[in-house]
Image (cartoon, rainbow, N blue to C red; front, top):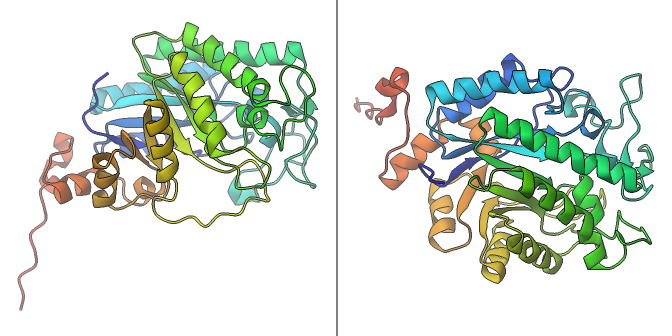
Length: 350
């Protein structure tokens, strides 16, 4: 699949859906980000079941109403931009049934809540609800839900699917020994802890068109002693590569409130390089990358194949135009905006 450039709009939760369905906000939000000329724009974490949502207001793709609502957003992007469209399929696991950040972000305490699930009955934090440990039937439902959502994404004409194995959500919970204390074939050794996430990937790979990219977002480390590590991430990426994974989107953290890190521009780029060098798989670097020259250097130096921005695009939806100006290139600009695309003249000194 060819992309106009290596700029990616990262999946960013908006907490603005109604019963899982996209609305006007999603058309405007994703639409104006796409008008800035990235090569690939991702829908936010899009949940494969109602109980898999992070909050009651999170986006989903688990019924016909959800699919129809997302189709409206896709139609705008197709009609007015040339960007490729990605969707991140997700299940929150024990980090579900929470409030949006502007309502406090903690567990829902009213009638909107639901029973969460996880690999083990361990809450995210002491004040959080305790999830139910998934049994064989529960794990099969999760696999089936991911496959069904991938089928809906294919019908919608989505170009790229990314499975969310990061940030402390369900697949990451299986990977980390901090959240997975199972004693069956899905817990204990690294091989066992990877088993369920790899089964999820295999199931979606079979369902998703082979001509379209399928990737995974990972957290390279938990930033907690005894947790998931970069070395284990490399092993996981190797296993994904031989199963037909096309890219790994390399993030970090999110599993435990005990994590200790100091974010700074490009703080996760080294993780991307390590995965890329060890496995040969294409990677996306992400994490406080805001300077176009920095982004260009990441690609030129072989640290990653794509660079994803989140906050940078929220603050400046025309970041792609500015990057093109800085690097002597051209970015997509809709004809309605072309009068503003060329560099503005400098004011005359007086």
